[in-house]
Length: 232
Image (cartoon, rainbow, N blue to C red; front, side):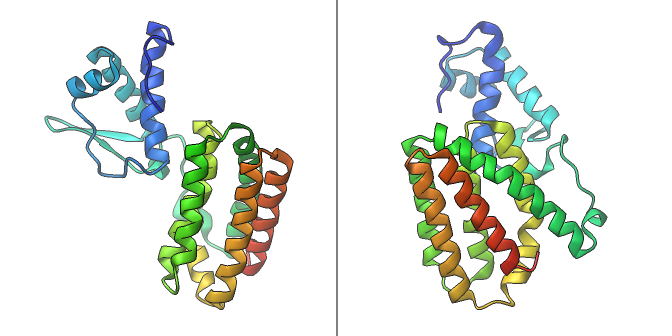
């Protein structure tokens, strides 16, 4: 994704720069704690003025995706720290709470898979394939496996080209990460991972084929089966 000031109006430049940074954060290319370039360097990189960069960073700061440290610069916060999305720890106090959150995940991600099949690029497909390969390479490190699993779902969300879809899915998946890890430890990892990887490949193939209905169905089947395996 590149900023092209010749394709948008002057008023649209801050929003486009903010969208670029947001996309990089949600895809994991910019990680929590990473320092953003200086205003001057950022402006030169994208061919815009420093005023555009200041406005874009202010927008991201308001969203909670970026934090500024006086005299030092702007740094990436984590996607789940966004001001527009909050969930208190006691909101997930019992298993039923996690089931409700997983139901939300099914609704969000089936729609994301549908949009991804319509909007994905070759770069998106390469990222999904890379995530599946990483999942297949994990043997018994459950935490690493869950991280690679979530990375695949974020890649699907990124392929929608809708930053709000990516934001919400990132938030929900992070909240479910620990419960998925705990549940996995009670299952036969080798068997479970093989089944899950096959399900992810079905999602990927449908998205690659540009079939939105098949992609949505494959995602729904995966998340329904996953919730059963995890006792959610």
